[in-house]
Image 1 (cartoon, rainbow over the protein chains, first blue to last red):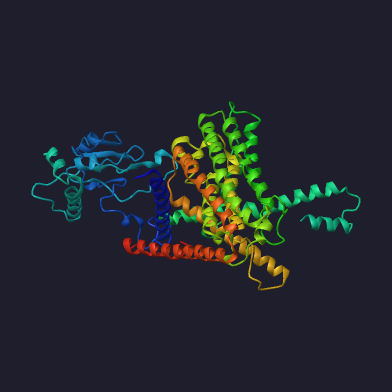
Image 2: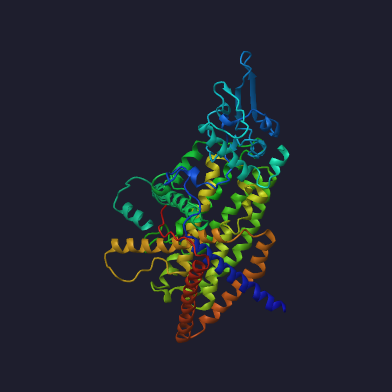
Length: 186
Length: 395
């Protein structure tokens, strides 16, 4: 291509691409915005519009927590602190505290993969605003609560059956999508 | 304006006061009125509108919290910036650093002297109007270089140097494009240039011949570059220079730079309107001077604001160019092309009236075909992407 021809081609390309680009941006002027205005009310709670596998703030269902401390050991930044004590008379172990510091949590999901019952898992919750860092520490055992002991041959108490099922479903669907986490535990 | 003051002096409104003092006070009062009633709200609303237009073009919502649809966002931003601490770094030049924003602002505000909002609505119809305007807008480069140097910061200095190189380079295609219109009108006065055109598009200099049509786009591009607008905003390129020459500025002084930038957008639009699009010319529909004046003002404002919208639109469309690309675009493409446009326009001035009309009609036809083709392309984008449409401007 000659010098003059390439010079003219440059001009033509500049004009044509600018023209085409401007038609695209103009068409975007009439499209519905992808984003929503966050604090505005929308017909359903915003948590329900999030993707199903969203990794929100951790939640713990203490009723099915066995107190194995696998999550505390697996946490890379030790944001989970669990205190387990034993009642001297009844020999019953109980949680004295179960705290998760949301400030430190990096939402890696390793704790939920390690959990044998699916008691610790990511919720859809993300609104963690607080006036001080201490307000971001989630206390899951406000008063002493006994550990859960899985029964041989399956759970019988109706209240706990649903909870165990929810935990197992979470483990099957998210925590161990390829069976890797379960293999480590086994 | 001057005639009005002279009349008042003749009527004895300012008896006993020297004429020079009356003129000086009149100038200050006019400047304050223009600044507070027109320029400040205009620059503010432009900043809000620009953010809304970008947001919609980028599938976002944009600021819509302060006032109805966020139209008072500029007031909130201004108050916030006034209340912020005005930091002058210890290593900065203590005299030049505070002065620089005002030099930039002055360069922009002085251009309002010759902008013709209507047949009688002009501060001063200088006989060298467009030359004066080119001169005062390049005063901005002094302020920017001053800010870059006085900040005592490598980013600021690089930004200031780039800006100086850019503005000085793009003065040439802008000046040559303006020259085509000056040749046709035979005058440098802004009102004279408008009076040489008519209200109808086929009487505008933009559609006078193919060369002025090209000159218009060359002028608009060069004016965007002179105003440091995207895609030519390398002096304040965030990715390489933090914020260029405004890096060290904070609070109100920071605001003055952006006040000038957004206000300058309207100056670009109104100069383009004056030179190429018939300015305030309206069809002869009324004899009432007040009504006619308002009609002229509205016509001029809408035409100028359309080009402000186009500048926002370009900013949402094109990525920022590199420094070498910027200089190549100016010196290798725009300067030769604007010379060709100037020579071509001179050639057309020797053509007889009938031949000129044919070429003018062809240019206008080409422009209309381009606009129709543009909307066909927009329709194609809709058909190709099948987006969810939302026609309402508010959200």
